[in-house]
Image 1 (spheres, helix red, strand yellow):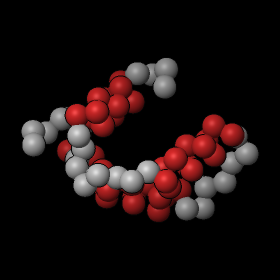
Image 2: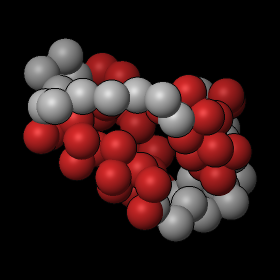
Image 3: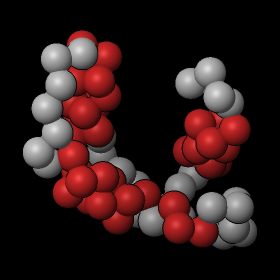
Length: 66
């Protein structure tokens, strides 16, 4: 599978685990952030990024309105 410009994010399952470790003690009262953490915990990560995930990451890194 060709690289998509973010080699440190090629392994989505490992990235999820890293994020969960960093967010383990994260507390907030903001509903949107609570929802994001909940979605991350429930997300079943594929072992590698597919084309849709690549597109979402690219949008997230480049769109400053997100």
